Image (cartoon, rainbow, N blue to C red; front, side, top):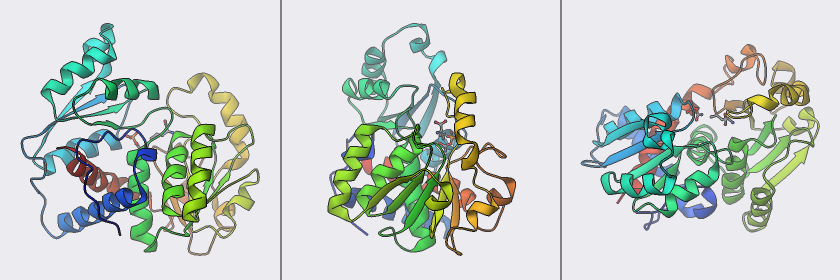
Length: 315
Ligand code: CP
Ligand code: NVA
């Protein structure tokens, strides 16, 4: 695992801005903080005296709760701020909000509808801005997922991850960026109409040439999972896509992760999902509740990886 200094004060809008060594260092610290938590160190004062604003323009269970709890475990003070309860909801600009908040707090985590909102927040902030999910990417999720894959498989390089479902998904975009940097072999099984953000894809394909990662796309979900170590899916309809819900569900109908599909993966293949799951759509109860499913460990690791991220980034 890598080691690195120089993360203090950096924004985390997407993982493109982080090197392979920096990502591995964050993952290693996440694993260490988890180990220390289980050996009885429930509180480690890495964020003592720090306040962190958590702005949410969309709902959240995992990200919000794991951040609030994690910040407290590190001795810091989380402030949950719902978009509509801020003056933002009445028209104060993102720039002015950022200028003001960054005089009070030591970092801002934001979950936003449009990725450009994060860029604007970061441009006017004196303190690090961290992406808690945007329409484009979900870097905290991908970092937690890399930690989980390492924990379960003992390696990242060469791990075969099949993502089945919405090929334009924000979580997939982040998995592709992280996977390209860390040498994963990712096969996406999705309808040709749903493919990743072209900018992210061309970045990942370029990066893969250096790292030996593979990023491939196939239309057939069975072909996608053949020999996979990990089968991953996400909801068919992301937050904010309600108007195109029916169209997407129709396109994705044959991309459900069920027992029949899991049988085509490696016999030791594990099932992952960032959650929330829409049971009966992208995944069946049988798969998500099976011994192959690691979704609860995956969700738990958000807590530990975010503690690693915050303690490394916040000055
Ligand atoms: N996976 C994830 O980010 O979950 P929440 O939307 O509940 O935060
Ligand atoms: N793709 C999903 C992820 C939720 C964590 C969404 O954006 O709604």
